[in-house]
Image (cartoon, rainbow, N blue to C red; front, side, top):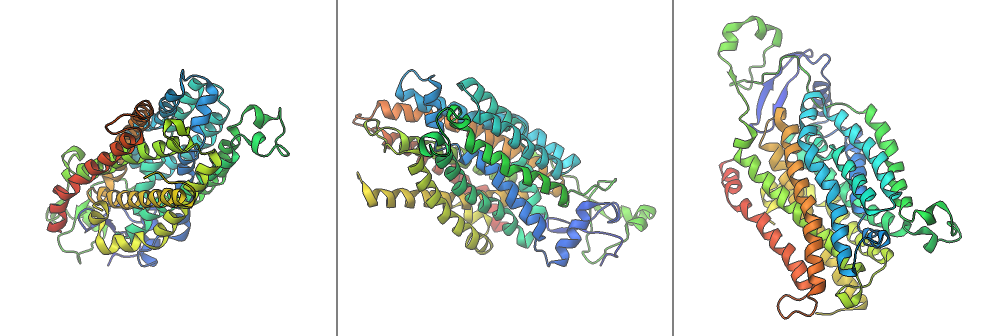
Length: 480
């Protein structure tokens, strides 16, 4: 075993013990690993709570938009007809993802070079500023730019995926990664509730927000300000959690052929004969890592499907009945999403980590006119199942990406996957808006009329996302 003055880092991709090039002194990543080892591989409570808090902050600006973006675009008076509202709403939804696509790979490189914490803190600060500004936008172009800058300055997702896998052992990675999706589930409850119940407050709560008040002139500012205010304590807490990146001055990873042969690094540096008998592994280029690329493909295409479905569902719910919609209010949309999010949260909290450990990451990836009570039951059930299946794919693909690369490439791999996924999600709302508008125009068509075409399209995307999991990844899983 290594002495108290040295540390040992595990390569999750090859399950081999690795010796760092310096002692534990001064390396925050090594200190964090010692704390994890003392807890038998379980993530420290403080760091796990931080993962949950930051993940929630990252989810709220996205999920809170769904109930009110349709009405916000209507108020901008930019759409020439009712059938074009969804198209412009899609552009606003795409703007944040386009910004994230441009910058995510860059933030991944920064996370590998300077640490996960700086990237997470900068991203949290961008939520505070740009999400608040979005609520005070008075025209379409201001809103588009605010969402774009929010995505451009926000590298949280890739850094958090790397961080959540590094604060626990390989056996407990499902708990760390599933915390991201669990708190995302909480965001799916709180976000639509905040966006649905707090928009247009002077209409809903005139006694508190009278006509002519600030939130009467800016009817969408209150939910955005609430989310920005919630991100402030998250930003402050980030200064008090441990960094997971190793900062040894010498970076080569030395794969010890005999797992019991843990040598002091000072001895290794002076003994060239010992060094010559050790195998020094060099990471292959990420673009040659087929396992990582396949896992990224699944993650990204499913992200396109998930974003398109979420946007379409909200637009369908709030659009008028003569256009094939349900004519719901923002509060009713919030009710459906909040109930479904609660079911999703319970599934994530109690079942996802156990299912991932039992079935493995790969298997988790492969997985008439109504009204009144019947309509609500179908809506809640379908939305809940969609969220649960999304959680399985998100957790499984994230674990596959993290396991297919070494810790030195984890920030870059997650940054690249987040970047490509953001591009897919950037196209998602725009494509969804176009298809939704076409569906409203074709409401009386004989073939795939109206919403049949809309939701049939996203069903095809789900199938396209799942196909590669039965190919290369299945073979790699069988080899292990």
